[in-house]
Length: 173
Image (tube, rainbow, N blue to C red; front, side, top):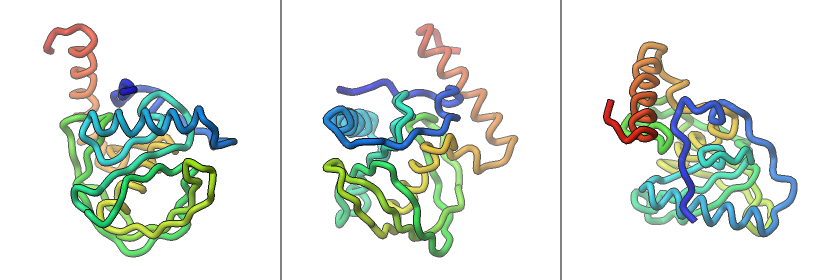
């Protein structure tokens, strides 16, 4: 089921997500819905708080730009190693139509549970490394515009408020 994606500055997006206590059928249904929602919005990553669920779950699929990768769900992801530096022009499904350069680690190692509840460790580079950091930020109540200047952030906030108003009223503002 495709779920509604919250638009920043929705207050839910500023909250810290809770760890998943048990990987059960409800979690697997949420993961499936998150993949459907992400694909429907043509994204490469999505965090549970973006669909209004304050649980530490992210889904990623960078195969269009990294054919060697595969779609992956991470439950309770934890970045355990960061290497190097890179700057990437990031966008976000919760901040549609916007992108800004963000400084990130070039390579990350992440520990997480898979949909079967098994612990996994994955070393990520390229877009996958960026996406893991971006989506993990969401779990901590941070969005990519928190990494840019106050002026840019405020301009984007105004545009998102207008977008939200026009979506709610059906009137373009």
